[in-house]
Length: 184
Ligand code: DGI
Ligand code: FE
Ligand code: FE
Image (cartoon, rainbow, N blue to C red; front, top):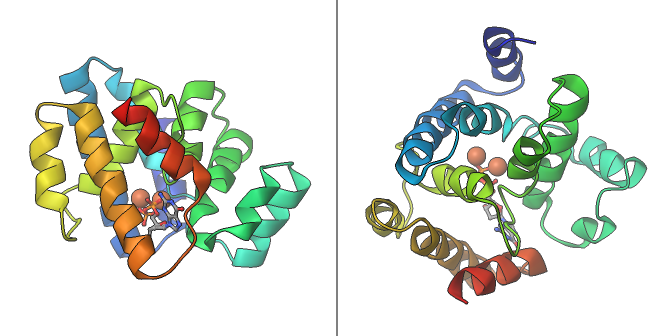
């Protein structure tokens, strides 16, 4: 599947506002890849597909997690986490992506994990700070992203963790580990 076919198929999977967000993540991921010495083509590919499963019905995501042996503990945490590993599965099996690092950038774009690759960090950070994002702390994340990929990403996880604490939600352990790893 070429880039244009992929874009058309992804666009058809989501409402207009989510496609605008995806385009913002694509642009931002390319900028960050060029800034931090990563391949902009792979960063853009992961960005195109990162939210491909965002609008799948909950039950369909749960089914993929169970049947395709994705980490079952995901089912104990917020459903918002599920579209990332399911998206990686869709990218591989419905879009023919075979680059494991691109698939991992999709897989970990929401939760993060300890020892993230540069590509994973770029996609996760681009998702936090694309131009359409507006939440408390986003301007600090954008500022930090000019100088320090790790510190910018820590600021991103800080805002998610604060949000989850405020909502009295559970925190997926990989997010805590991702943040700890970046601070070591
Ligand atoms: O898919 P997007 O909206 O573009 O962004 P995302 O993939 O980063 O999803 C973020 C949502 O996931 C956000 O509303 C917080 C929620 N979430 C729930 N539990 C966790 C979590 N995010 C992280 N990083 N860790 C969690 O434990
Ligand atoms: Fe997402
Ligand atoms: Fe996103």
